[in-house]
Image 1 (tube, rainbow, N blue to C red):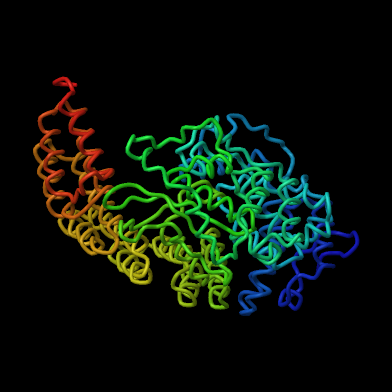
Image 2 (tube, one colour):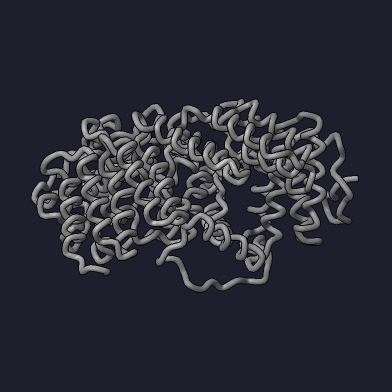
Length: 591
């Protein structure tokens, strides 16, 4: 029995033969018609059953299409009130809430489907390609009521154009669903000079389409994915300034790094410690006229790129001598170039960019994943389907089926982190012992050995497990091993591990042991280290000692680090150490 194509009652299931093929447009229309009559939640078990039938017959493409139809039914059937609580929990867990977000949300009691006309609902349910794009890019911190409202608005204005530029519409929807934070795109300019406001979604949609049609875009907007276009539509400069930038920079795409050096470097601001933009306006023309420091150079270059439809990233990082900013961009071969304006001789090992979809920092492995583009491979598509069903089975309480599907997922693509997480969770749910879980965590660490931050993430979890089993010395050896292994090539990870050691000592040990641990960390990991070690280890521990009314020990800790770290004359690090020592010496005893 199947869904009636015109009226009738809802079925018990989709015919098995039909489930082996993706839903047709006619079937999608019937699903929407049934949902209007009986509600979207009633469609979920029907569509899930079809998806599982196809999956068990190893029809992965059809299984994914039916599963996406099931996910649309779940999304459409939720009310804003039902969505809001888990969304808030996700925002808090990811620590991406910020001062510019609304303090109050008006929550409608109606299903989210109410924002979309039946025509758009039908297109979404029946379009396997866009559904894969949508659910592939969707994040737990996306505010779905606004995301769907933006998609509905752009579709209503011009359905044909929406379908041609659906990925652009999606990118705008997931970036514009909440306001940007006060630190975007960087924190070295006051809000009076840069208001941090995004344009109206319809205006942005029309503007970037027009740039492609006028031949101003270096990439075909209609051919980029939403995960690339979100780094275009997050322009902080308004359209008028972007059009000005197009006139000022007409070089080919491969010369985009030259936009960084267009801005005259203001050494006088660095010498004066003037990190914040001193002007009252942060227009691109003002930056070009006045010159700036690296943050301004990177901002200018990213906005020039976005004006040309080029995805760009603004990086911040710490090297041996100081802090720095540079940018990355998607080149003509659709490969990410992440080092434009990055000074190799300064050894700025790791940079952090901000994801405009979540407004969280993008981790190093995510940037590598962007650059490698492995998510476009057929093997990853198969892995993605198995991972989706693994999560589905796990949620339904079938840990064995979840583990089997997750193992298939990681076998197809070792870099599918969500599959590893499901496999670990399913193994736990099966009641396996701690040693089995630790072995699985080590296997995941091995899978990500080319991505040191992810490898460290899994090995840290091994250490946590060892510690919970009372094997403290083995756990500490694991942590120290991570730090030592990364000291040469990934000093930032070595610093993070060193920081964890000191923080753990400061929160669990008596003062004498805290100081002993700090001294050992400085002597072991601080030799040759620079600004990042100062920021994450030295300054916080000195501050901790000051708050503990141990000014004398604070001075000793700072001086020990100054003798150990690599400090170049006249560098930013030398200036920071001088300030720290001055603050400690001038602090009143016991304060």
